[in-house]
Every structure is written in structure tokens, then in C-alpha cells.
Amino acid sequence: MTIESFLLKSEGEWKSMRSGHSLAFQQFEEVISQIKITILKLTNSKVSALLSSIPLQTGIPTTPFRMAWNAESDWEPDDPNQVSSGECILIPIKQSESNGLLIRSVGYAESEQAISKYKLLNDDTFTLSTEYGQSVAEERIWFISPNVRCRSSVLKTISGNGILQTSFSSEVRKLDLNG
Image 1 (cartoon, one colour):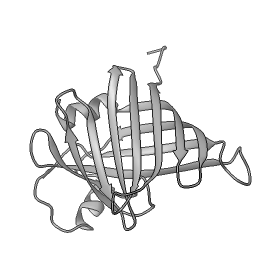
Image 2 (cartoon, rainbow, N blue to C red; image 1 turned 90 degrees about the horizontal axis):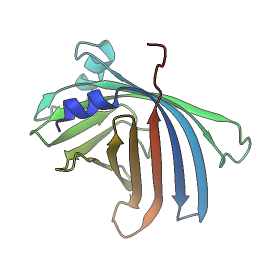
Image 3 (tube, rainbow, N blue to C red; image 1 turned 120 degrees about the vertical axis):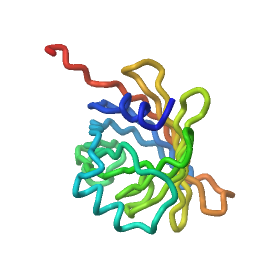
Image 4 (cartoon, rainbow, N blue to C red; image 1 turned 180 degrees about the vertical axis):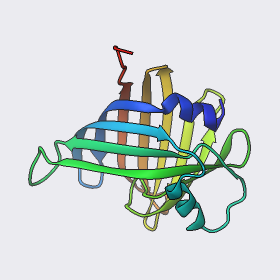
């Protein structure tokens, strides 16, 4: 599988159910999310702006996309019904058929622009590693059918000696039964 085919397979609306374990705080969190993945053109103004804001990268920009989400968590301290939402622009920079960089306007673990390393494994699993100032996030995404995918993540200390958080998500594509 190529990065382009993986992203085309991922495009659409998904309902995600995530279990998160904060090992540092010994807490368990359940999150229900609505996720929308939309493929963008390389000529999109937000894509161009993001590409121009980063140092020159070796590789070929391909298949940029927008990811938007609305999430409800049972771990919100003040209001359990509070909805967390956001969006980011992501641009793969293809360095070979199976790996490259992923430019993110907003990171997964910290709300800052990030550059991740991605790799597509032989079993079509997409892996992502992102270094932040104080932590490293490692993610894996794989399809178990065309309309069901799984995602796992581990958030480690920058030294790699401590695991701060783990999570597992199952994501089901919303189908248009009228179309």
C-alpha cells in the first residue's frame, strides 16, 4: 500500500471509540469522537501556507488532507458533556514508497505544529512517530475491513524511559445508505 492509497481509503466520516490509559495519573478515559478526513489539493491555500512555514524537506508533497473532530470524554473534570473539537491540516512528504514525513499543523499529543515520521509496513499498517519538546507519540493505524479501522498510540517521555499514556481506538466509517 502507498501513502496515497492509505489516505484515499481513510477519506470520509468516522465514528471513533477510544479507551485511554493515563499511566502517569492512573486514570482511564473513554472518548467518543466524530472524525472527518477530507483530501485536499496541493494548491489549497492552507496547504501552501503550511508548506511555506516549515524548513525545506527532502521528498515529494503528496495527498494533503484535513482532519476535523468532535469528541466527548468522560474525563472532563468540570463538565462531562463538554465537547472537544478541532481540526488540522496534514501533508505527507513522500521519501520512498513506504516512508516519509507527515507535516501537521497541530500535533496529536501537544497543540503545536509537528513533523512526524511515517512508515507503511508490509501488512499495510501505517505507523507514525512524533517528537515533541517533552514527549514522543507513536501511533499505529490499520484497516480490518474497508469500513473499520483500528488505531493505537503510546505517549512516552522524550528519553523513552517512561510511558505516560496508551490508547486504543476502533473507528467505523459512516456510510451513506441513501447514495
